[in-house]
Length: 369
Image (cartoon, rainbow, N blue to C red; front, side, top):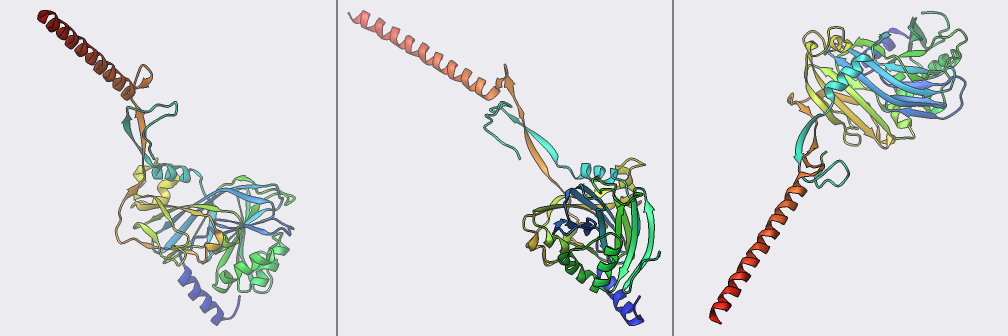
């Protein structure tokens, strides 16, 4: 595809963008003219929604592996995924168990404190916290079937030709998404098109989908997010970054769309069961896990792809949530009971003292009389 000069420029762009996550996703519904609705990882077309999403990014400085999981709600037959990648990618089915394991590692730890004044009834005083079909400008690098999916790997140097190829093969792009993809085409990106395999091609892409894992050569880590600007609803994105060091954002959108660190710490394969897919992603020598959450209230503020660089120090972090442990006496807050008892004792002592003084006063008066 293209002349050697164009190929050289594309290769240069690939090197500059190598390490970008393949998780930027366009979810396409065949034959729909509805507007695009983006998720944190890409764009949605038609009556398709992403109910949940997360991605594991394994980066070793030379190669990047992306494991993406989407929970898609769609009744549209022909719905599909298109994943831009900065270099030709090898695709395979992933294992969702890796997300469960990394979520457990990243979960907050709970520390309990004794609450003498509150109770579970609600008045606490304290709180916690290459087949045929390719057109000019498009190369079909390969197709394969991965479990329930049909996967095609594409290269394109013309966004119009890419849109035509997708339309001819059941992916209809609205104008705004095609325009949004143009920068990726100009930068020499590649594309993995994924749809459910069915005899009539009318199966709906819906439910919690099997993760798709892609790998490609990389010398820097960039997570493509520009398509998120197409979204018309707030987005939540969680990234599990596995690298040699703790990672932090370095892109121009970091101030407008900041990351919140949920966990940072070194993990080893021994931290997981031998057959746990997370152990393979962590690698034999282990890795530093940085878990980042992104609450994107205004998708239009996402003006650049997320870029990551090693932090100055590998400072560990884990959220600590403080929860009360209620101390009770006879199902009542112990503090209230003890305070009440102390008040009763004080009142009783005061009454006794008053009676004693009163009797002494009466006795003195009687002696004088």
